Image (tube, rainbow, N blue to C red; front, side, top):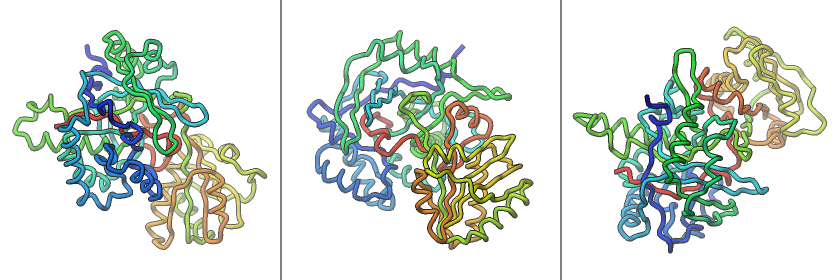
Length: 441
């Protein structure tokens, strides 16, 4: 009998840059980072120049409006790298990753391929591989335009496994395989080391250990892999795989097609370096009285209650103090610290249909913004930033709690994907870099 890991895992045939390629210039941060900082990408362009680089075969989101003009260049460069020896293809295998970051922290990962037949990004997904946040359909077409004609994929997707006993990835470091690469990443982002995993006994041990980690709901649906970063990229791969099957007279003939699979880095949710940071909310151009009245009416209309209690802020504002002041559980309801200009206090929400404070607040904000188009919403990191922005006249800042690792998978299994912008997995410079490639045509 096949296990969940047997079903979903695939061993890719990786392509890596030739030995003479400068990996410091080749590897570039995930495309969805620094989207409001054009100076970062300008610095990357200056560093890379005309050297071989994943910058030339991916599309940073800051340039997403230029998809049509850039996609032909991307496809042309991919062909060039395949034909001129820039990329070298290896025998099938996984890649064991060690990512060094600031403060002497280190993240361990395992690069594999996952079967898109077992991934569903819809909100009601019951698949073995599921998104952690809602997928915005409008964000897929530009990515699909790039991938549809591309001969290669290069991935920044990070997929989480719930392994508190560290039985899957960590044991591979006891008997490390041959070194594939080791180098300093650009823009002071730490270092990256990759080692081949080809030993059958190690592969078998990973599959057996993974299969013991699946979460099962009351209906028997299993969840083994949760997409932590790069959900829209993985959703793009899925959408194109479904498109390819729909175009075939006999989809069964395509079951060995390389587009059925996608490269991802598996990361243990319980890796010490992996920190979930709350993403807070700030409203701009809002009247405090109007806001509180609207919250009271909204939750009353939806079978709950909401009231604002002024005061209670700690003398020294920090992320930890805001977590302590806030509260979110099914019995006591939600308590969300709020600063509106010179007023500070906490919202108390009882009787909400949502398990998470973030979900309750976001449902209200979506409704409120629809009725008050002049009000603008932004998502920010750090309690100090929320306080600085929210304390200005006409602004309101909401402090939201982080997601606990223990509740992460059970919440997805019970409630589906988290509301958008619920959490961030570390800082931008800690995200996955593009490096390894795989043929998809």
